[in-house]
Structure formats: C-alpha cells, structure tokens
Image 1: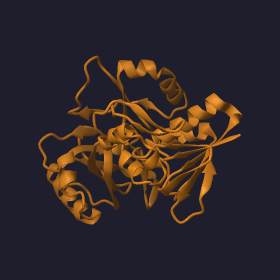
Image 2: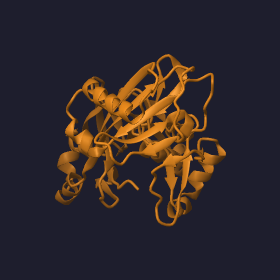
Image 3: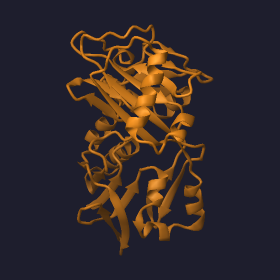
Length: 316
C-alpha cells in the first residue's frame, strides 16, 4: 500500500485526499499534516470562547458558482447540497458585483470549514495538526519529511498545498530538484494580504442593519462586513450574533508587519464609524492573512520526479 502525505488541511488538501481515496480505494494510505491546530486553512471557522454555537468565518465568506463552475463541478455541488453542508444564500449582500452570465451563492450553516471537514471525512485520511513541515529529502524512491520538533517520516509521494512562498522556504531536496523554469514560475506567484476581525456577542445583543453582508467601497480600512449568523440565516435568541470584518488589500499591506493588537484597534475604530452604536463584543479575534489570494497565474502543476509537489492556481 502506497503512503501519501498531503501537507495542508485546507480546501485543496481535503479535496485532494478525497479524490485520492475515491480513485485508489484501499490501495493508498493517506496522511494529512497541517501546522495549525484545526482544519480549514483559508476556509477557517472560529468559535466564541464562551459559546461554541456562536461562530464566525474569518476566511472565505460564501461560495459563488458561475454557470461554468456549476457545470464542471456539478458532482461536488450536488454532494455538498445533499449532505446539508451547502445551502443557497438567501440573505441580502449589499454592493456585490454579479459576474457576467449570472451566478449562484451558497452558505455553510455550520461554518465554511465544514466543507473541508466533509471531504476529509470522506477521504478517511489520518489528519494530524501541529505538524509544521520544514525539510523534505529524496530517499531512493521515497520522500523523508520532517515536521518541526518531530521525528521524520517516509512517504511514497508528497503533495504540497500550502502557499507557494512557503513551498520555496522548505529545506532539503525540493529546491535543488526544481528545474529553473519551474522555480521561475513559482517565484512569479504573488499574493494579496488582508486582515480579518471576528466579533462575538452575547445572546441578548442586537445588531440593527438591513443587510446580512455589505461590500464597502469608500473606506481606507474596511472592504467587507458580514453579520455572520444573519448571512447564514441562523438568527436565534439563544445564540449571540457575530460580525466578521475584512480589510482592504492596501490597508493590510501598509500594516502587515504590525501586531494583531495594533491592527485590531484601527479596524475597530473604523468599524464603529461605519456602524455607530454597536454593542460591546464579548470577545474578538484578529486574523492576519499574509497569503490571502493568489494573483493571476495560470493553473500549472509543479512536479519533482514523478510526483506533484505544488500547484500554481488562480482564485476565481
């Protein structure tokens, strides 16, 4: 039985694991490592420290399917809708730019990370957290992979799904085995950066706005706000509301090396200007997305030997 390591427990890693299982059934042992403490990657869902039912999506906000994507990924959408992981977005998103040809938007009732969890469950993979890969060496026909502070392990194939700059930082043989054209392709990948702020409120709090989410076009800091529970059409007197705020890319680039505490204070000040009279949050979480979205490169797989080790992909 071949042993395959997938580095990264985000959407790409989870779908890769699921497809491997469906294509190879019991011929492969699938292991997924992630450096964080949970699944999701940039599709992460956070919970209030005082109320686990109060959640907020700090990364991707909802799923948009153009007619083209809905057609070529028809089976995925059907599967997620049938299992209740996805539901149509029916709440008002103010300021959204609708793509030519139309689109359908979907939300995740239990948070966007539920999509990742669904595919990982389907894969039957062994998923391990706090595994930060630092070194990869070629050992004959196998790969020896070392996570930080842990003993190395050997695999028949390794799939890297983390942002490209993190692939290029790996120590060992991956860099030396890349052809010049492959390295140039990887080095050409650029990413935008953003900050996200999640605000959790107690059950008796009320947020009075007519929309569930809104794109902001004239603020130096904030680009997007969502009343997260309202976006999922899950308003309840038993669970407090939650808000997620995404900054603009220029704001994030300007403040990228500042502490989360410093940036959190600026975002809160701007948020209270846009939505005066907000109640006091019960807790707040600030997330820096250094690698938020990839630039406009064409999709290409990067291979070392016979094994795909990374992929350059543009976000739709």
